[in-house]
Length: 425
Image (cartoon, rainbow, N blue to C red; front, side, top):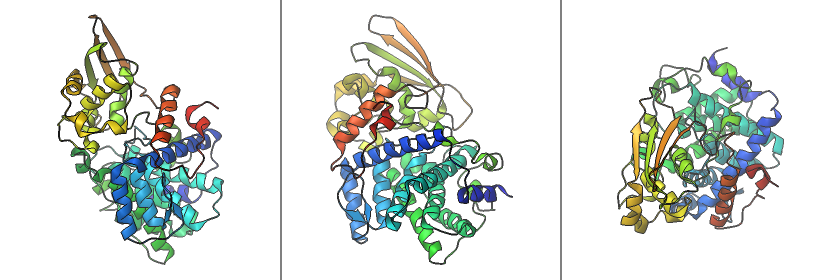
């Protein structure tokens, strides 16, 4: 079989889920639903909902953090936006893919639209979609140019939805082909700190639902969308599935996904983790020696007129908030704080240095040197970022749950399983 055929075979008939993979999938699903519900608090989410309502009302799919329902494709769009708009969604760091975001939004929509989907079937479909999105990211050898969470996400999500919608396995190639035909989203939105970034996640979630609906209606797509002359690994990313596809169902990447303690770019989390528990009076200088991708993603300048979407990716601003407040609260992303000279002075204590790493997708390790007010210094190398599996970030995740529940505009349509997220009853 070709690598693409191996991927499709895994999507149609994955092996039984190991217990640790199933447990992690439940934990990550709970985290994603919490984040998506908290994302309803962002004013831009109201604008997205207003646009979706103009596309047509009605439907049975619940909206995260809101009352009311929409049709599947529209609900996937709104929920996908809300999952990513606070930059709080889980990420597979080696793949540089927010693997849960598109898959959860699309699968949630398809499952509710169909009705009577068992929890076991939904969980298997979720894992299938996430594993495929992660595999596509891990197979990439080039720097990010397209927004990989959306481009890899729509492909994984479409096959997850195909399972739930009852598409025959011999039509999965059509689903993959149409999803690829709809794939879009570039890093220009990230460079500019634009609200278009979560809109790209939203668009991918809607596209996954649409691809499945169209195949169910009898339409088809190209059958070599990954390895063909104009396929994914020619246009979106350089790389090859050949060394990754055989590992699907044997090496489970679900268990390597990191949960974000703070609602901001993942590339900022190692620095924030080093500063967690410290205050402005204690730290006078922070030297961060990081891979080039970290500087590219969050080493952007602080401007008084920056948008909240930019601030979530501005490490100097995030450092200032952590030193002043001891946490990152989305409600602090305001023009008053952007223009606060005292807060800017705190951010100026950060110096970001390039470690010269040649891997264009590396997010770690990162090294730090803190100069304290008493003249002493502390040095630390972070290889396991807070929220990553094995990082021991239980207290931080407790704080995340509390803040997410506080931000939700409406009671959650699901019962939050806090034990799965925080490791405590």
